[in-house]
Image (cartoon, rainbow over all chains, first blue to last red; front, side, top):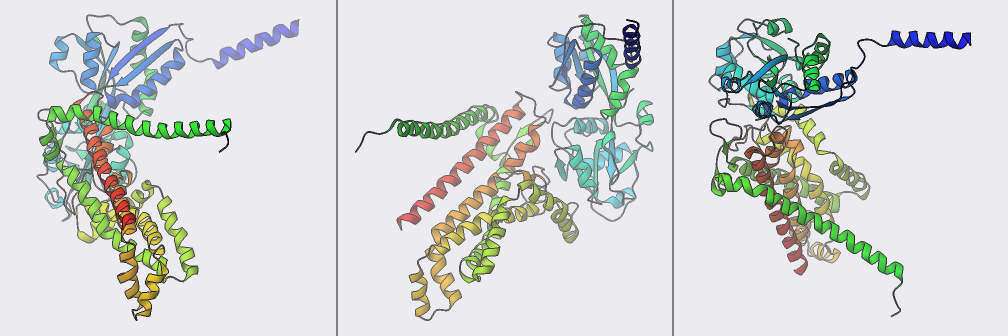
Length: 269
Length: 291
């Protein structure tokens, strides 16, 4: 009998030692999120982490685009809207409230052999609008510029073109269907310049400073690096969030979620 | 005739069902493509869809859905692949069927078949890693991704079907024709080009038509070497084919948007192209048999 009690106690202690963090609150329900397709990676990381924290809550995500997501949050078609751009004033006046859960930075990358390592936003605009076609004009070698970008509809393309002010005016030499393709092709072409999300910049390409500010997590967080956009969760001011939705929103902004957001390639604010 | 066994009857029904399934799929896909492809064409207008020179599907102020650059690129690409690939393929076929020593032919034949079994993404990868940088360096281009790169990759990709079908057609030429030609004093090459090839022409035509079909329908390999910008086709610039036009934008085209519907319309045009080529193919084969 004594033995049994002892092993029971030991088992309990072991259980308590293994368990970290607060136990699930026993919350149940469904949280529907809808919006930016650029946030797919961040959302899937958050969904996975939240499932471990609150097994009773199901978080759904559908990537329909930022505008549609904000619209859905306002109309009540979903609980939380997702937007990868700042809210428009028209959306704010309809009662949309935004919470920043992550920052996404677009890095400008060139081939490592390219001596050009600092460009202004104005220079970038001229390069991507096709007005500068030789690296010599930018202090580089006498070589043609190959402008690489993403396909129409890509979130990275949208973020870059918006930040540089060349929406719908870009003259691309080539477009590719994924960030990996862009990086791979730039690392194979000394003439190339392109963009990719900060997290996918790796050896084989060089990131360029924009307006003298290097692209890094710190410069993105303090706002010095200009080519960035926020990942927002959007709720409607007129409709209070349900318990499960509020818990998910709180989790997404928590210290705990930051690690998952970083792993998904974005920067925790 | 004896009464048929139940097993025989049931097998016949099974085969009939299998045949019907295949036909049903063709009809289903046709119906779906037409249903999914027509709305955008109706909205954009047939003329401005087929003959518009600008494809700018996500422009916020003035989206354009003209697929003339895509159509022309697909046509030029297939034509270029034929111009480069068919002479090489035909000469290889003549070599394999007529000139090569049997042991060498026995080695080369499986190698050609192996070429047909290589997945298209591998052709694309080799094109991307070897051909594209080489073109850029030789021709001093900003980037090597171009119609030319796509044509060269497609030319290699159509080789196996051109070689296999042509060689089979050449081997089927009756021996007597060639013997008669040789007996009249023609040399062997003269016999191959003046007697064997003309006698096998319907088979060779079928090989060419099959090659065109493969070149028009290929997507993966050229996605990796063509650059994918919807420019009006020019040999050394980035181009977008009908197939790659669908492939590259499908990822992010929002469901229900005009962009997505227009991609289905491209699919419909591509489908009509392939149908046309298939009809052409069966006509050439049929005419060949009648002669």
